[in-house]
Length: 224
Image 1 (cartoon, rainbow, N blue to C red):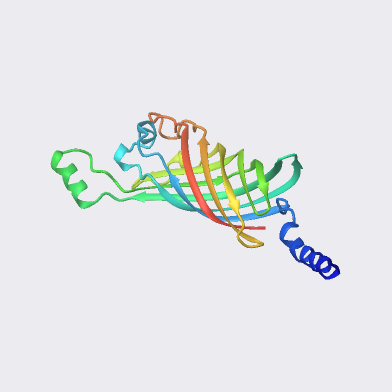
Image 2 (cartoon, rainbow, N blue to C red):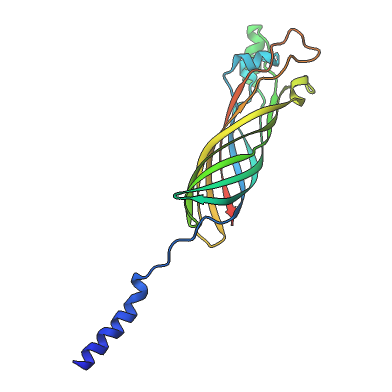
């Protein structure tokens, strides 16, 4: 009986680590993100094309870019951890009409589409609401910043609105997963709602740059 009791005690001690798991870590104080992104510039906005004197077919459409951001998480209340962050995002797209498109336009006697480039540079402060723990968490976030948005057909470089900083609302959400102690993966979906511009100087007959919405999907690494 004594041997059996001792054996039970030893088994209990050996089994204890299997059942006594440590609680998951809290969301860390700060995180640094580095991402690549897919940016969906508008490709069917006739008002936008008119504001640059462009054909609708000249709008470049989707492009690619990079992002970097820093976030801090100073406060937790019940299930929510509040975060403050800021980041920068750049993206670019371009298009060059192929030979068949140019030939078809010339044969039809219509305007030949020009090459064009489009770019976005945005500063994005954010307030975030985070749900989860230090091993991985989801979030929703938003903020108001400034963007420099340029849409330039060939031969029209330096067009006035392209140098105009525009107030930009950003909102979206995503998640982070940490497979290693300090390195994880992040996926984010974000909408950039860009205010309309002012009347272009020197182009009194041109429409004002319209309010525009640009969507961005980004993915990359996070460091904590």
